[in-house]
Image 1 (cartoon, one colour):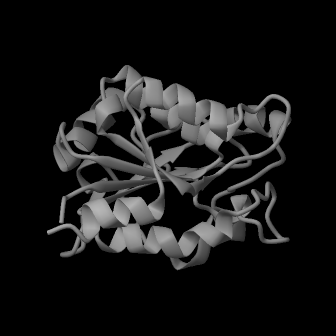
Image 2 (cartoon, one colour):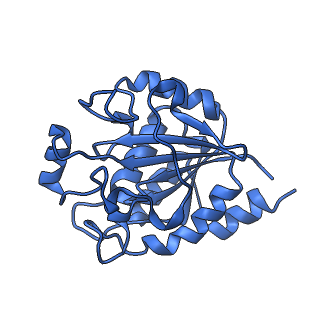
Image 3 (cartoon, helix red, strand yellow):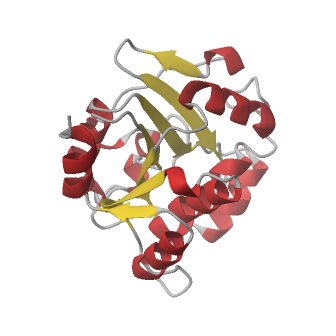
Length: 222
């Protein structure tokens, strides 16, 4: 089996296709079982997630574009469908948690772009680091600069797009595998289609593959 790290983007209740969700994304709940399997066989899980506060000016700006969502302490902020639990960590040193089976890394953000982190936030307030350069050092320390990054989550044309394109800019394109049936998109005029994104990312060296094909090549292979 080949080692890999799973990057899960915005797998939060407020993006599920649950009727209680603030911003429901069709097909999200159907991805959970596959993502659990990806987690189980991974070396590291990176949890990229929206982390909003009602009194955060950056969050308030986002709420002008999208309904309020993923507010800390609410049902919508919790992870979807029993995906692995994470620990509240207080500083850079505690930003990862080693469970004995794999490493868990929290990556909170208050905009759609994970590479911007928690813009304008007090670093003592939650688990975020206000200096993304320091965060990236911790990120690289845990996963290494050559490890395969297996990406799934929502929304393909917004937050997943921002993460992948940010990773491409940082020279990671040939390390990224997007699981085609573990991402979900919204069919809206201003959001790029999944097909067009997959085509563009493939041209830049990103691998697009199905869950079954990934399992066969990376998990079942001796």
